[in-house]
Length: 312
Image 1 (cartoon, rainbow, N blue to C red):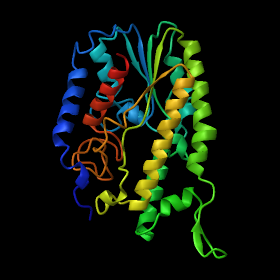
Image 2 (image 1 turned 90 degrees about the horizontal axis):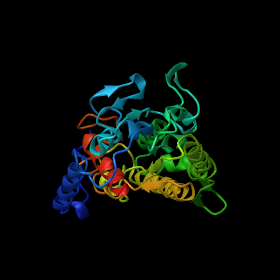
Image 3 (image 1 turned 60 degrees about the vertical axis):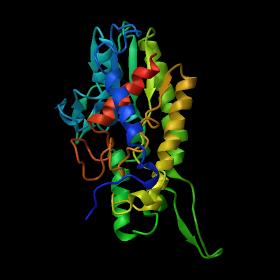
Image 4 (image 1 turned 90 degrees about the vertical axis):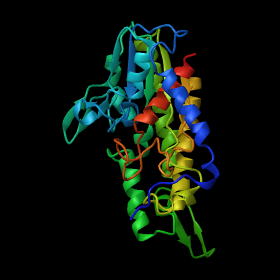
């Protein structure tokens, strides 16, 4: 049985700082908080389940799990956008920007870039995490692999062994690793696809300010803080934390090269991961409405604040 999530010892004295950060997030997302930022005429939100606010009330758009309290909605309200179009959708991969999205042969969303028009002047894009997986399950595949592996190898790194091709080398009598599938997918798949997507956005909405939104701190750097708190081994927690760091680094560099602004959401959510006792990202057993391993309502507010700060 999982114990309630608890902060790592080195973060237990950060309650006051967390309160300040959350207070700032609430202030930034309140009406009129961004008076210095001109109200966009047409703001379009693109992205996956982290952008959609999957599981956060109230939900709409069927299997897209789109919340009316996701960071896009909060940003639109804070900026008093003239028009707001939200086409974010859970399980979206980068290809969902230019192709219809299907689930079990049922179309759940049109190509997201179809929402862009020449008068679009603000775009947020949060995408890429689901492309870490080879299957259509996206991040769900990675979560399932890590949890299933922990059942049979609770003291090892079963998830890392799968994606990094771990094996026992009898010649050197040591554990070795091959190519890292996830790292390779970031550099050879996600980054170039995102670069192309940014070019397409600029062509369809040439006047738009484009923000590429990174992923929050889902997992802590110290895997020991998750022992008996999440059904993933400490070694795999640290491995997946590193993978998400690599993904965010790729998003940052791709944004810089593609005429977009990168939005760091990992820093403001630090210490509020799935293993914290003050979670802004829910774990395997959510304590507040959200899809497992996704931001809850507070997490979406903090992400909205990061977007607004990037617009200053």
